[in-house]
Length: 234
Image (cartoon, rainbow, N blue to C red; front, side, top):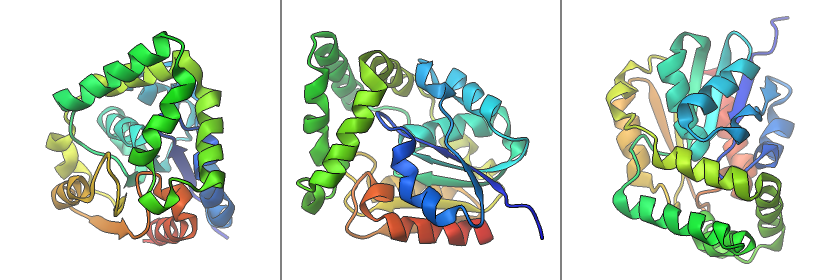
C-alpha cells in the first residue's frame, strides 16, 4: 500500500489548527495532515513561509486560507519543487489595496489601545455568511482562536499581510493540480478575486461554495473536505 501523502494546512489571520478541525477528521484516511505553528511569531511572509517549510516534510500537498494563502504564494516563490499540489482557499494573489491597509492599521491601533477583544465582533460580518453571523458555535470557535493568537501575534500578522507582494505574476508557473476555492459570500476576498487566480493558473479548478463566507472550511466543513479530497486524488 502506498504511503499517505502529506497535507500541510496553513491557517489564516487570527486562526490556528481548529480552523481545519473537520477537514483533518475527514481527510486523515488519505493524507497525513499537518498544521504548522512556526509562522505565528513572524512579522513578514518571507519568514512565515520559511517557518512553515521548516516544519513540512520534503514533499507535500499545500493548502492555505486567507493569510495562509499569502504564505502559500511565498512558499511557491521559495520552494516550488517541494509542493506536489496547491489549494488556495478564500485568499488572493493581489497585494493589499490602500483601503485594506488603512483598515488593518485601524485594527492595530485598536489592539494597541487595549481593545483587542472587540476586534473579532467587528470582523464577523466580513468573515461569515450573513446567515452564520449569529451561529454561536462558529462565533465561539473564532473567538477562541483569536484569543489563542493574542495581541502581539495579531499585530505581526497584520504587518506581514500589509507587506506582502503581488503574487499574480508567478501564477502561470504553478504547474500542478490546483484548487481555488471561495465562499460565495466572501466579503474579504470575493469570488472575482478567485476567478482571476484560476484564470492565471494553468491547471486550476475553481470551486465557489454556496452558503459560506470567508471561513468556508468552518461554515461548510463537509463540502470543503469533499473538494479537498477530490483535489488530493486528482
